[in-house]
Every structure is written in C-alpha cells, then in structure tokens.
Amino acid sequence: MRLRGVLPGSWSGYAAAGCAFVFAVPSFYWGFGGEFGADTIGRWAVDLSWRDDPPAMAAVLLTGCLKVLGGLLALALVRPAWPRPPRWMMLTAGYGAAALLVSYGGIYELLQALVAVRAIEVPADFDWYAFWWHLYLWSPWFLVWGILLGLAALHYQSSTAGRGHASATA
Image (cartoon, rainbow, N blue to C red; front, top):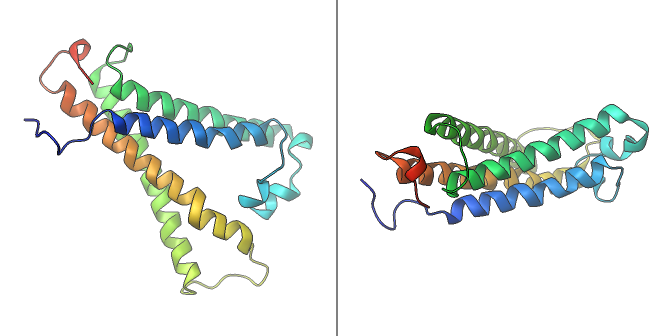
C-alpha cells in the first residue's frame, strides 16, 4: 500500500545522483594530479605527490569511478525506462550502498564529534585543518548521500511492489 506524501519520490534518486557526481569531481581532479584542496582530506594527501605515485593516483581515480557508479545506481532506482537487473538486485544494491554510506559517514561524524568536544584525545600534531573539513563537509556528505540513496531505494521498492519489473513508474 502506498501512502501519498509519506514515501519519497523520484527527487531522492536525483538528489543522491547529484551528491555522487559532485562528490566524484574532486576524486578525478586529484586522481589526475591536481593538488588544490588535497589538504582538506589530510596532511598525508599533501605530502603524497599524486603524480609520483601511480598506485595512489589509480586508487583516487577508482574512488571517483565508484562515486559515478553510485550516482548511476541512484538514477537507475528512479528512472523506469533504464534497463535494470532484477528487482532483488536493485534493492540489494540500493539498500546495501545506502547502508555503507550512512555507516561510514555516521560513524566518522560521531567519532569526530567526540574529538571536537574533547571526549577523545588526539596527538599534539593532529591535523586540525583536515579534521574540521571532515567534520563539516566530507563525512556529512557521505551521510546525506547515503540517506538520499536509501530513500531512492525505498521509492523504487514502493513503485515496483506487486508489479512486473519493466512496468515500474517513477
């Protein structure tokens, strides 16, 4: 049974895709050798010269590709005309990715909040600059993206319930 106004609409998938695609841009920028803003993810990123470390460049580019795939998954959950695998695979991928993103963002946000209120001690040479960027941007971005992706999966589940996979509407 679908309750109008209670379940999310396709907006959640488009918003999750937007988060994913915007989030992929820095990964591709850094993966292709850009250094601006690398200090927001950690001192280690500044110390590591991307251009001189092909495995590091490949890893950063891979994260960009995974973010793009996450965006495409979000769109597939709300675009009924797109070819898709079976419903159970879409739901597993949607809810699974959402759970990973929410867990990652949520756990880090909680730990960082504990550091911010000094409930957890940190070393004297702690990278406070990157810490604040993670607390206010990077970790919440994962959390919001995960919540939106979970809402898109819920939309997909409710819009395809009791119908053939190909007849789902957004």
